[in-house]
Length: 352
Image (cartoon, rainbow, N blue to C red; front, top):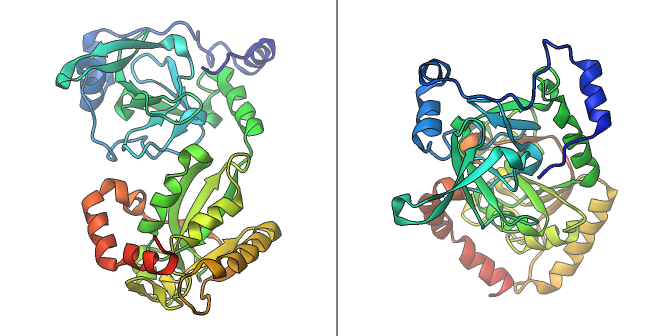
């Protein structure tokens, strides 16, 4: 649970909010059924009042990355913060903990012939979702919520909407965690996401696939797939350097590519599929060059290392359907990976 701020935050509210702008943070109420029908969309009503469940990967907030808080769509009571949100690969917005624990109620749900823990809001009694014990550290919990049960308020709108009390949550989160980024190109970016996502509990915070190193801004998949733009398919990794090092990420990168292939990677050929390390500073450049020297002795085949070490260029996220492709389309992903011969070639280059 995020702690409420003290006297300074209350002074901030008193100074910066007029009575018309502010709100009584404890005066959360649930409208009657007639008013709810007018206020909510059919999906919001079905989820919050009839315990419905929206579709994964086809809801409003599963991929929301902005800073802000999530409140009950019925009552406005604060529920969760973006500082506790993470990508659980389920297709629903997931959080490690509530923002205000007192606004969360737990109820045993024995539908679907299994026992689950349902999560409801305290003041509006809205059905929100469920909580599971397979989340990341430090809580080990996954609050799997329905987007339709919540409304997102961006950080810049908190004061205007009467939630200035929660602004210090974001300043404290920034000061508590310093993040870093790494950018690698290793052929088909669908296949580069799983090995780094597997490090989520060890310090990797987020992975995004996209395009980098070419000419022109905001390229599309159709543009780069034909070659000629100079862009490579790549992955951008956001990580906590206090938990996992850049050297560790480099090690994972090398073991998931064929560094001897200068024409592309595995079955995919062309400049857009060639391997590269894109360093963001001199420190990363030195570590990349050092790791390249170290892996030469680990490769089972003889040959010239073809993987480039290049200065970072603008990174452009790929289209949504490419993000987490292996989760959204597991059968198609496995079929592609097998037919591309990726695992067989990796075994030949690196050993079992």
